[in-house]
Amino acid sequence: MSSRVSGVTERPAVSAQEQSAASRAGSSEGCCPICGHRGVVPFLSAPDRFHGRTHLYRLDRCPACELVWLADAPSPAEMGQHYGEDYDRAISSVETNENHWHGKRDELQVYKTGGAILDLGCSSGSFLASLKGPNWKLYGIEMSEEVAAKARARTGAEVFVGDILDAPFAPASFDVITCFHVFEHLYHPREVLAKVSEWLKPGGIFVAFMPNIDSAGEHIFKSYWYGLELPRHLYHFSPASMKNLVNSLDLEVASITTRREVFIEHSFRYILDRLLQTMGMPRPPMAKAKVPSIPFRVVRKGFRLTMLPVLTGLASLAGDGEILEVLLRKPVSGQNPAKSKACCAARNSEGSKSWTQVTSSAAGQTHLCCIPWWRRG
Image 1 (tube, one colour):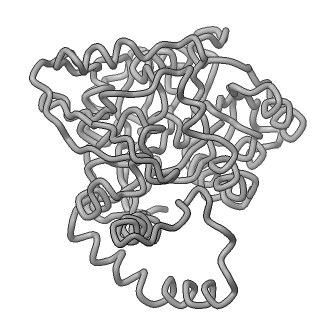
Image 2 (cartoon, one colour; image 1 turned 180 degrees about the horizontal axis):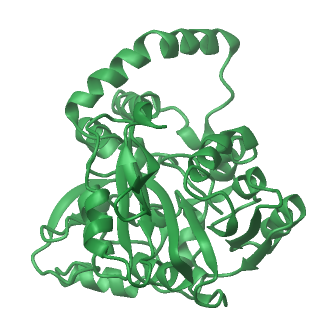
């Protein structure tokens, strides 16, 4: 299900029966589908540039909670046509690369070294495979029975097939729940987050990655930003809107940070595609892109080693990082929430941020905080 590629992901864990009527009706009535605020404002319009289609989709923004969402989202029954074989092929190389997950695994084990873990949108089990061992009891949720069978065979995990909201897990079942580049695909993110809160044990954590709509990449490229992924991304979060969403649930914000990943190459590709089309020289969209030639790959390698780091550094002047990394915690009974949240209030202004554990010598308690990676240990 989840491809784990920043900005591009597989089909979300949403059943064909789940309806998007609430969000679509809320948008048409000028109401925020999450907080209900009236007076939403247009954000931008863009087509499905990955497939080279021309239909324009509209994003709206709530001035109260700062959420951005797809106002005219396709229904779940229609959404399959916006993925397809080309999309699956584009993401499969990263999904099957276990080395891709080692960094996330190591980050997780800074503050949780074992227990029961549930991966929402586990796909063929690449992330769960990186945790395989005696310390972890592995669980997943996946929409496809065929893909879930691969995850089971690969990891030994217990994988539920179906919609997240239909999964029959008991309350307080998990020490960790993860959601890598899936949350933005969900038709009902608040309901899913409420279910996460129910499933977590006290002190358990929820880790989610998703594109940051309030980022330098979006500020620079606007409707050409690769991270938009319309219409597959239904909700577009920022640090502010995610905090506002969490505030209505029984979860604490341990850390909400951003990481730099501008998607310069892909975003420029979308701009070039548009220019060529305007000049009467259209070329196949990214979904149909062929394997690049060896000379092109040599030039691209040189660009990535020389100019790309410079351009990425300059992009930091335009805003925060493009990947939103969210760490939430289920409160422990009897713990002072104000003290826990105060510990996690410090944020680092760099584009790349990380998490660690900090122990309060006065209280003898361990809290989850965000500090720069160079200050760890």
